[in-house]
View (cartoon, rainbow, N blue to C red):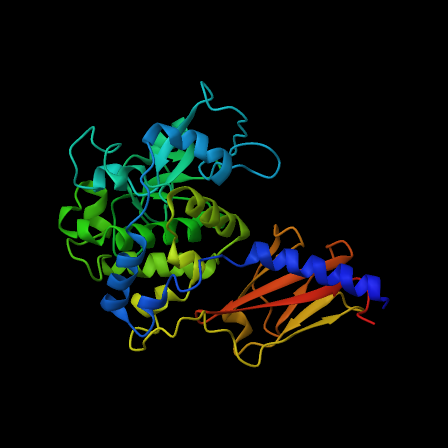
Length: 354
């Protein structure tokens, strides 16, 4: 391979990793290292709670930075609409975690930081926003009362709660889970104020564990099955630029495991616990990736291009192989998640490394 080609590929890889890695300032999470469970959650609260509160109605302007799709429209997680303008477009400012849960007086949502927090505010098509109401997150069973092909509302089919729930698309379930984790952490001081119909199914009036048992199971399942995407990383960085705080569950997805999941008995070491002995081997003849993880069927992968956009996602087969034959020739990054750990590896598809 020529020197110029080496330099070109190195530059492309650098670009890809700039997109793939969230960018907290050095030392931002230092005071949370060495803590676990409720102490870890409280330490994160102290770190992320202080921030610059924005004016509520300015969020539409912020959305052009935080939620602008690369193809040139507002990125709506609630519908397939592609709106390029805000005024009169049928888009709402939607609180992912319903504002009626915050325990503040009606009309005060826009005057308290919890009501204007961009980590919880997203553009949403008006009808989907209305249908969502203040329902808990969940899995909708048969005969939903609302279904626009992206989100659904209806009776819960998830064990532990039988009321009406709101279900986002699979590709955004992790986004919602990490948003809710952020909210109960950033606003831990609201623990005794949580209120309303939806919140009684998901939250308790305490700082830890906050989520009811069914909610922990649901959110951790969504968090694991829909890993952090480039959309979330880019959004986290954009929100940080505006209000000067971050969602730690996007920066370090493994934090959820230390607070509510498999690592509750361990203290966080300040890392994402990269997978040991992990490697990706690309086979040019079969056009497949082969990943080495302890149990391939429990792993999940995302493949990004060099612009940081997600192209493929799913699970390896029982042999740890991933078919990438439909991808054009080029350089890619495979990110593999398993047991709360992650690892990123470059591969060159369609030609050899030599």
